[in-house]
Length: 247
Image 1 (cartoon, helix red, strand yellow):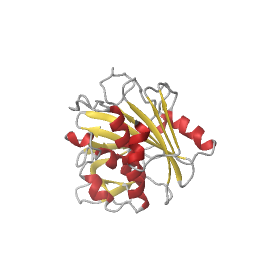
Image 2: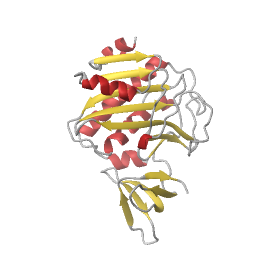
Image 3: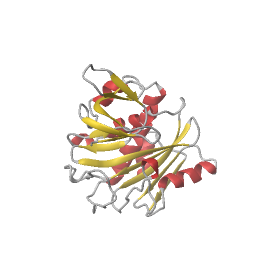
Image 4: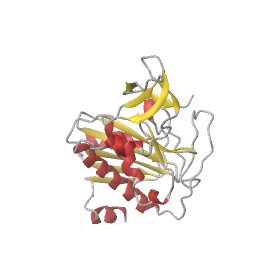
């Protein structure tokens, strides 16, 4: 049924694999690429070694959404692509039923109640990327290792969702994100800032190789960089990397 729905939208990749359990759907897609596959979609009911940004573990209990896809971009990949993926996922038919869905820069699917999903972009080269998506559809037991609030779509009000239809919607959203990125991510700041988590709030940007940056998060500029206001004269510091946190 998944293949038939994607075929109806003229959106079938070269390979589609559905699994009951895997170590990592991103790793599965990478193996397909090494075999010569140029477009792929791997879906699993459960992951044993899922990962998030900066190689953090992604908890992957059964019943949630875990998929990875292989895409070829016309432009060299940069940070805007993850933002495009998030923006297009928010506009899927299933999620448009819910209120107050947000994106926390740069790759967290968020809400005022906490994180409900994440996006992992793993470039293979400048033009080919693996996109991993994890979405908490169902509530799950919290771990002491999680450093931020988490929630699920069910807790946010989603009822009677069709898993196969939602998977199709997410994959189509990623294809749309590719198109937005290929055309230069026009009006990215305007589109992102309307759903930006923590906008106009005091934040801490944790950076690996520089001192942490604190100030008011003013959203992003069109190249995807964060704008942080640190003083009363309204000057901004432009920040391209780091982890946005509430102090």
